[in-house]
Length: 137
Image 1 (cartoon, rainbow, N blue to C red):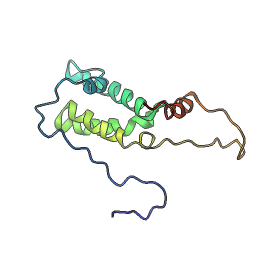
Image 2: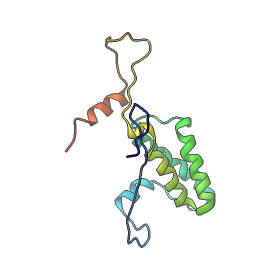
Image 3: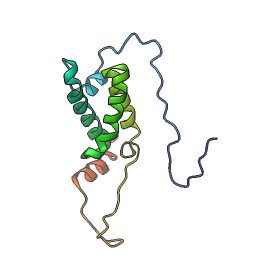
Image 4: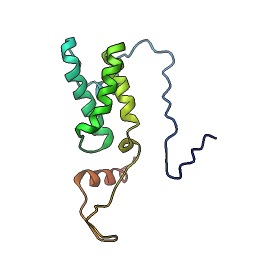
């Protein structure tokens, strides 16, 4: 219904809903996976946020994380945390990570120095990513 004229794959919208009768964040295994640290003081928040965002981004993108990869989620964290606090900032950073192209798509590019059809070595991350699609329960 809302088809964009783009010919390649595209994401139009991502919606996350629920839970509907929540009484706060609670203690859950998934929350423990996100919050690998929790700041003791306000001065610790930025360092803890960087650790959380780096960990989430590394797992979501299945590979190394550069400073450029961290820039947007960290910027969104800082904007949201200024307005609504630490957890709101982490929530905003997580939303950015969940829409990161390397999370949504498995992108592989042939090296520029290799001729078409020629065999080449892949990185350990590319190999792990390829193998992960074979191990489905």
